[in-house]
Structure formats: structure tokens, C-alpha cells
Image (cartoon, rainbow, N blue to C red; front, side):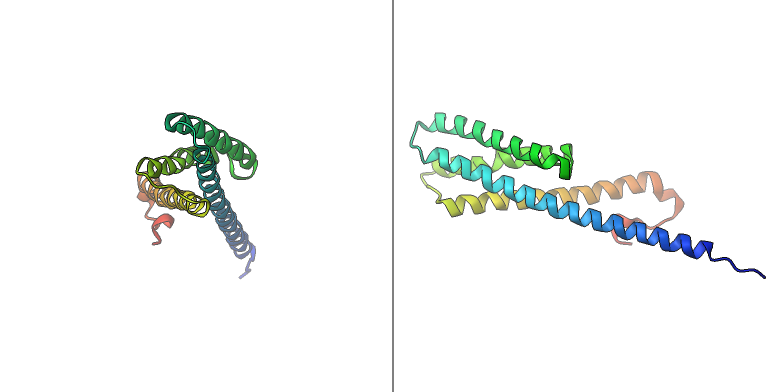
Amino acid sequence: MKTTVAPLRETRIASLARTAHRWRAVLFAFGDFLFLLGVGAVTTLVMHGMHQLGWNFALTCVLGMAVAMLVQMLMAFCAAPLLGSIETMTPSMVVGMVSPMSVCATHMFGRELDHMTATSAGAVFGLAMFAFLQIYGARVKRSFYRLYEGSRGDPCPASGN
């Protein structure tokens, strides 16, 4: 009886491909994490800087939001070749809008944030968006797997089975 090594070799190649795919996914997630943290911190700091000018509150909020969204858009365009265009633009738009509004909200309640607190608050918003995206992505993967691949009886990779 003749033995062949081809199936074993194909298994090794498939295993290496899966490992490379996992590393790419981890590196992409780390980059996305850092990007969302940066967008939250920078846009909140921009809004904080606008509030420090002492102008009319409504004017400060409108101009601060415009400048914060411009900064977010420029950061997203710069990161798009590395992280992807839709993957960076859409979540960072939410972070770039909600995070600076926290400075306006605290200002309406009569509190002024210092630079470090504003930056930290922005980073927390970025972290929260990243966590939301990871949870939502895992749920969507699991849902699609159940819909399209579940009939074969394979365990779902997104569920950890």
C-alpha cells in the first residue's frame, strides 16, 4: 500500500493560512482600537479648546463641532489606506460627534473640564465604540453563520464552539 503526504501538506498549509488570517485580524483590531481612541481624544480636546475661547455658547458648540468633525474626517482619510475606508469612517464619525458633545454637556451643567479630563473622556468614548463594534461584529458573524452555514453541522467559529 502506497502512502501519500499530500493531505498532510494541505492540512499544514491550511493551518498556516488560518494562523496568518488570525494575526491579520488581531493587528487590524489593535489598529482600529488605537484609531478610535485617538479620534475620541483629539476631537474632545478640539472641542475643549473651542470652549476655552470664551465665546457665545451656541457659537462655540457649532464651530467646535464643525472643527471636531473636520479633524475626525482628516484622521479617517489618513487611516483609510491602513484600516479600510468604511471601517474607519463610520465608527469614527459616531465617536467624533458624541465625544465632543460631552464637553458641551458638562459646560451646560456649569462644569469645565481640564485638558487631561477632556482627553480621557474622549478616549473612553473611543474605547466604548470599539467594544460595541467587537460585540456587534461577533453577533453578526454568528447570525450569518447560523443562517448560511449552520445546516452543515460545523461548529460556529464566532461562538467559540
